[in-house]
Image (cartoon, rainbow, N blue to C red):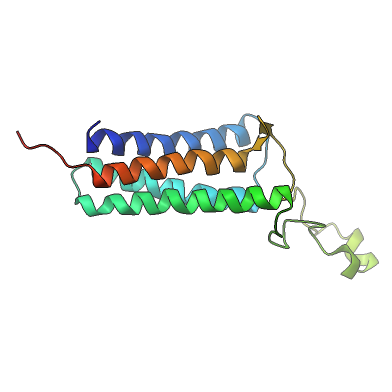
Length: 158
């Protein structure tokens, strides 16, 4: 497979994962948590890097695509670990979420409190034992491999 094909495949992979996340959110009704949203940004960066590379940009940018895929894979691993209880997640979206013990009666009855808080440690969808975060981590590691293969691929001169 050519370097250009590998870049295109990795770019399409990140785009597909982004589209899938948006489909789950907007068509499936699964609101994203804070960590879910964090995982989307590196995919967007990888798509931009891939599109720039496909227009003929310097080959060194390939490593930016690999880094973006690695960041989202790392975030996916972190998020899946939070869901499985391996380590704590951000206090703003795990455990009890809002610190109810530190709130007054007036605070609890206030209509100004945030609504629709999605907890980062709750699995809202899974397939084969992996949550969306787990699947993002796994598929993003495949994308890292594609970016690295593209970076190491030597093009044959004709």
